Image (tube, rainbow, N blue to C red; front, side, top):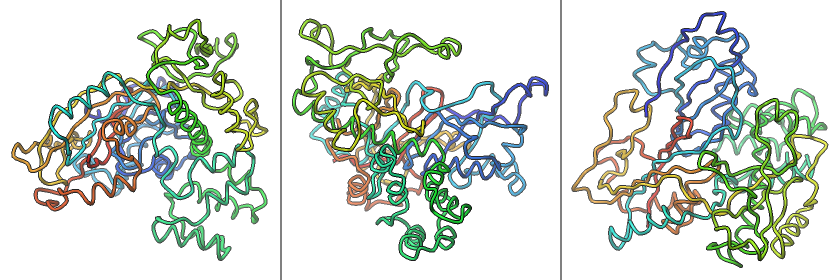
Length: 504
């Protein structure tokens, strides 16, 4: 798929003036979504809250997604000029060279509707696993057939919880407990593995208590930390901690809270599978009362009663009802129907001992399982449901040969725009690669699908170790230096690509 590049709109100004938003396609390379949105906000000279997306994409990736800008009086031409810095770069440079800072923006147009988290049907990935070791081609095909026909446990991926020593979900728990001081301490606290400039900035704050120095040293890409420090600087003190936290972009703040929900979900599902397996439903499991039709594949919903006036006026469907399985109806469902709630005030918990375990888990974290309402409404959680086993909508694969691990085996959208020829496989290559195409539902993780195939830890440090110790690294640079990766797309015509890993 190629990105359509639109330099402007053919609509008449009077029609354009009725379009409150501008949408565009963003391709980013090895950048955090929040980092890129903050950068775009600076380029466009708008508040960061004016930019929204339907989902957060991986950092270690080449990703494509739609972005929505609440434009005010800005035009599509102005967006194009500001983002591409057309005063400093020629049109030929913009169209013929890679985007600066790993960012390319295209397909810009006026729209009536906005985008918000969750407004997508799923994601598509093209994943290349290098230096594959397997007893035979048949063994690889058998593993892929299992994924295609049986699916995988729908865990949240490790990236949901961050890669730092201070996990994202721990900050989320502090926010849910209204412990603002602890949340800020964890966000700003020094941690190993970061770049020297970030480490120095954290130490300036934590050890020297030098706010100005910390803010001067903290890179702009470190969004949450800078927001807190800038707020303290404006206020002249650190007393209003809730106010400082509120300056962090809402999507990023809620990421902490949602990470805690995901952490609880993973823990309880792991225990359910340890005790009862994942082959069939059991008494006490939760399912939707009415099964989805082929045209409605949404997996997450909050329960509720009749639709509200707001739902009726907006055309939104009322939340779907759930039920707890009994001996009378457990055999009428399959494992693909079974749900596990993400904690919140409006969800039902499983029956029996699994439900008790769930409630006890939350109580040990200092939370009331039946009350997630907060004075700060944005931290109030209704809860939702997620299927414990996910069956991919599409799975296909092919085997490729290669020698140089730095030569690409997949083409990104930007490569297509720039006229770069699609990668060619090397029939006599020394190493085997497995290329997988997946379509997954909203919030399902390709890394968890890969774990079903590879049976290998998907954490960043383990995958990095696999890559650097792989035999093919001896042939780096033998044929080129282009980046290679995993590709995917939102089912709203966006594309995502990430760095490949070795399969042992």
